[in-house]
Image: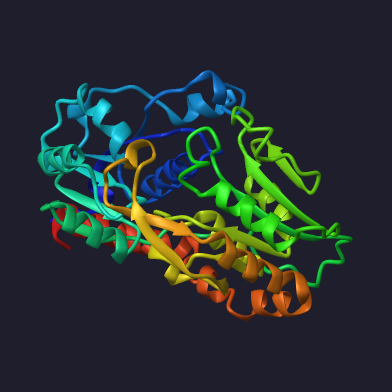
Length: 357
């Protein structure tokens, strides 16, 4: 009987390590390299925005070119980009696996049709995503493999930070994720909570090409980090925060998971995949019709009430020592999903999909 170690797999994915799906692609490649006979990394594209962070010697070592029929299976990440890739492929749908997640309560019917037609199985991050796909009409088998946190990097800070100011942080791709991540509501909540308060800060992490609306961020207490950060730099950023703000529907919530692993409490919405590792100050939310970007018309997404969020942010400000203790109380909620756990689950799931093992 054949095993994964006899299998040749082509991975079609992003190859940009400074994005979530790029990091997923990088880890999938590393894992497949260890567990299969041969793996080829086939990137979707490289654009100018990411050119500077992809050194040629790294890119060339990861990417080769070969005829698709040479491989036994193709593993594809993320649906809406993968569908453009499918137009170039001649693979049988019996040999293509989709690794993906979603950020609203329903998939677009076009995506559902393409998934059922072009893939033999889905790997997703949690039960919420799986149920979303099933309710949307996906009929192929769906398997769960939670994402990971690198515990060699993301670990609890050892002492209470002595910031001159109380610092809140959040991250979003402002060019297309700012609205979806409810950034305007976070800014409004901050201003409600801290009207006239000087010793408090709100720091946003985004990419260099993100457009920052000067009117929205017009507050000397609000700053923006426009940079590509590696995981060590992200960890160091977390170490300087008193709390991390989360206010949207997440397909997994990598920044939130990493924050919890660092002992930084979350403030905001506990919904969907976040329920697996949320640790902090939970606020109320409502579900509204999704209307932004690719999620337009795709069921419900979370909307946070700025007033309720402001109350929870004020709780952190009023007692940062309690926030520190709370942040360190349940870090294992996040760290139990480490790289080793991911690789074991991924290998087991891949073997089941391909060989029924």
